[in-house]
Image: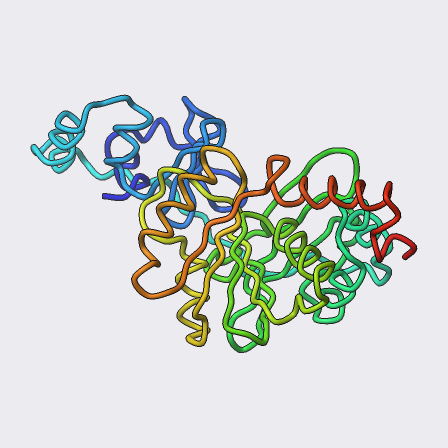
Length: 298
């Protein structure tokens, strides 16, 4: 049983509808339920099933959690479904003609100008209007936008998915080779692309996929990764390049386990800093101080 069905039947008072079509719980306002998955952001854990929720959030032992779900308690309760509001069709945020703020923001984050220019040219990156957020677009195999992640270019941090975004089509950059780099965020994907560009300039040989975050406890593969591998059957090598924290390490090990029988899989963490954008910024600073960073003048 998925968590939304369980809460709708057993704890309907816990469900609080969010504006983007997802739910959170009243007891834990950082626990979000969306697209069949749940993620407790403050703890960095998540999953799909009600069983995971009872064990990791309600602190039940395995036997008690199974009994709760299987010994008639759920089936005997009336099905109380939260009121469903019609969701809006997916639409990209309005576009600003001049992406100056986005370019300046990404350059401050250490992203190479060549990488930024390529993403702007493809339309998978642009600046929104009137808020001037960086918008990272995900598309289906026909090139139709199905997903958008907005990230603030200002002082206040903001990460927000456009309403009705389809998580199966997270932000990605299609490459010309058979290697796929998988990261937690779009900024990390651009950071790894920058690292490869600084090494030999051949960054466009790789595919890049952002998962929009990971959870240490989530079972199986993320839907975005499953979809990308299905649509790109030429992928042979996968580099899992996640944050160097408990959630990143747990997610990397889980995904490696599921992928290793079909692909050549490597797991890599940033040598310094929490994530690969931290590492790129530190590396660029060291190169600047030594006069070695080849794109610093730009």
